[in-house]
Length: 48
Image 1 (spheres, one colour):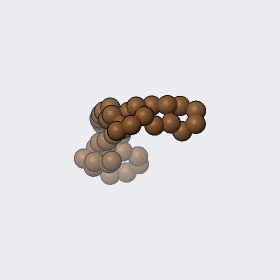
Image 2 (cartoon, helix red, strand yellow):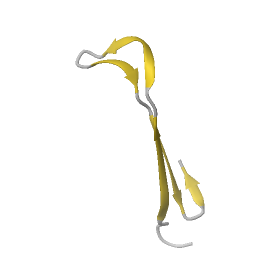
Image 3 (cartoon, one colour):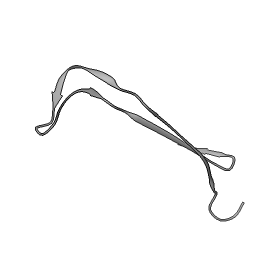
Image 4 (cartoon, one colour):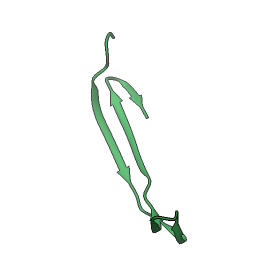
């Protein structure tokens, strides 16, 4: 293997998780959190 491996695949997942109580950081108020997960595959090596 030489050079930079080509990206073969990228998978993503997003979920909405409700908060127990409304949250605020001084500018925005929200009642949920939205985490995002991404994984990629380059040739036969998995990177996360």
